[in-house]
Image 1: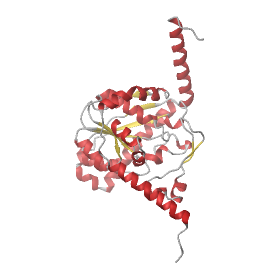
Image 2 (image 1 turned 90 degrees about the vertical axis):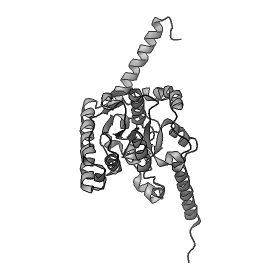
Image 3 (image 1 turned 90 degrees about the horizontal axis):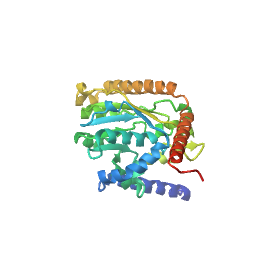
Image 4 (image 1 turned 180 degrees about the horizontal axis):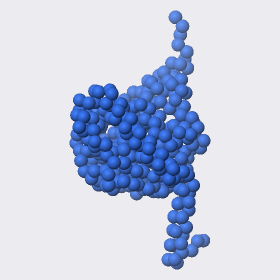
Length: 304
């Protein structure tokens, strides 16, 4: 019987170890959302998101209390400015103490230090059990169904909604009987230039074994200051269908195409309104800098 190639065995052992670490991180509930921790980190988050000169619209469409499922389009590779801006908006609307969570990529919980940091901010692993539990406690839950596939889509598809046919969020909403608020972001995927998603390469080297679907190729390592527009759309009410509708494949598909269609129409509108987010962002940052210099000069401070 032929012996396994040493390199192949090493590769498989590495993937197995990574998979075990991901499972352990996903199942570790010892660290929970900490409102005081969030308060201390908000200034740093605001500093980061200001780089993208964000504009938030329609925040009054988010219920001020009670359970709600926010469904967003994911962009910007690992920088994901739309997620941070959406989190800021939710906290400004509902307060820091009421429960609010975001479903996050499993791999992040396997990174030492990162997993506990994210959990204290309110991130939980992206699975229906944790999300359903949070909604049952009256929480606001943010989900990005497109996940890494959408966040790493090629730059040529920057103005497209791509959930990859994933319908788990629809079934979650139907079972939970909560309002569903689409949240559309425009500009975040103009901040990075993804040349290729790398999904085929990820499969070739076996990363799909640990639920890593992409290995993207970027034109540059750092994000550019593209202007970000985040818009909360009117809530969708699927509560009339009842929890049992989660098992109706046709209805689930209809709800999926309803929300993705509305989000794509909104993204098309925002794209037409702001066709060059990077130029807009650079201009806004330059204006802010000029205003800051003028303000300091008027108070007696001079540029050395």
